[in-house]
Image 1 (cartoon, each protein chain N blue to C red):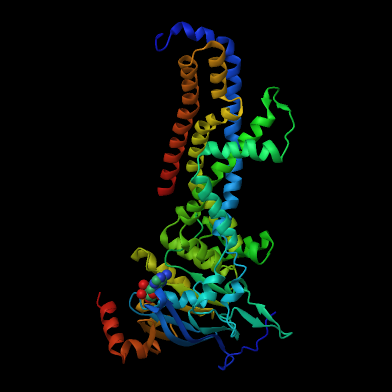
Image 2 (cartoon, rainbow over the protein chains, first blue to last red; image 1 turned 135 degrees about the vertical axis):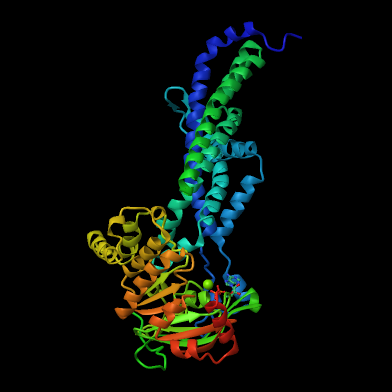
Length: 262
Length: 268
Ligand SMILES: Nc1ncnc2c1ncn2[C@@H]1O[C@H](COP(=O)(O)OP(=O)(O)O)[C@@H](O)[C@H]1O
Ligand SMILES: [Mg+2]
């Protein structure tokens, strides 16, 4: 067997530097878009889970126009299909491997149901690989962000809503102007951490041909028949992306918690 | 608009009429309110006293329907606000707009509940602008006038975190006043304050009472009750045990529980 890692092998990777550079760009773009989609969809899911949509609510009101005190009809009247759907979605995503989800989106949804144009973004990013990757990771991360957003909303002191409602604000206005702004400020560090998680998790998308850092490893491995050296390069690259980002987040987190205690 | 055909039987100067109000928790294990009936007249200052857990907060929260009662009715200006639906002028059952009713009652909380991400002036103008669609400039002018009256005009651009407890509570009071409420509800407004700040908040409340505001005040400040209250209610275990003028309650309490409670608060 050859040596574990040979220094002389590193110059051989040099011709593939361009691939690694493109890989970095794809990894960053992929992760950014994933967080954006995840955050938007996560907000929708959180709203769905916290919604007060009860189409059978009328069953809770008796003939006298007042609330029933109990019984099966009262239980049925509390059923919220929107919240139920969102809960099912979140639990399924969180209980299945991300690679299964990615394959279902790539081979299932975009492989047979929807045709993607064979265009290239920035001259090298294959859209028909990149886009399914973004959708799959975004859908995955939305489930986790939904729970972060939901706990952020629930961590806001009930007195805030009570005060807003006592001033005549509707429940929607209370959420919009009072609860959400405070909740999102509180969960910004958690959202940023999710970004770091996504950078690492996005490595798996090379399996559907997304040209990220891992795919550059794969390409140089196939051409040069070496694996440890390209992996070492990838390790350094991922570390350089993730470590400073988490340190910066931690810094802002400390500053913010100090601001809160002022 | 809602008609007044759910009119209560009481006289026309009654603004809030509570009838057999009950609030149970844990399927009736906890009776926070147990058959409370009460009329509040326009311009009256009603002080509610009683030991902790006697249902005072639950009563206030029921009045502006932050808490949905288990049973009983609350008539506000003749309209039953506990009915989910009421009959409109065409005789059709329509949903009661609770937000509309909450606008007419201001509420002041023990822990102020100012919005920490908004400045003082934003705290005050949010509801008038968003709910009543008052033009922003007009809402700000009214807010500044009110701030001036409580001596906090120079703090308009500050954030709640920069104010003392007493200042926060004065802002909370004028924030509620910005909506021109017909009734003000106070839930232990001075209990979370350092002793030296109690006076400044009570002074604002006294002024409000002098101006004829209808007020329901839960408080342990017996001095305030004696001086300002038209009527004092003593509650225990979710029920009204005794009520009367401050003089009747403080000098000549009839019920044992009232006597015991007064002894404990006046001797601390
Ligand atoms: N959300 C709730 N769930 C269960 N019990 C409650 C709840 N809110 C209040 N209670 C109970 O109702 C009773 C009355 O409470 P409260 O109105 O807050 O009393 P007070 O304001 O006089 O101290 C207490 O026994 C309290 O524990
Ligand atoms: Mg209380």
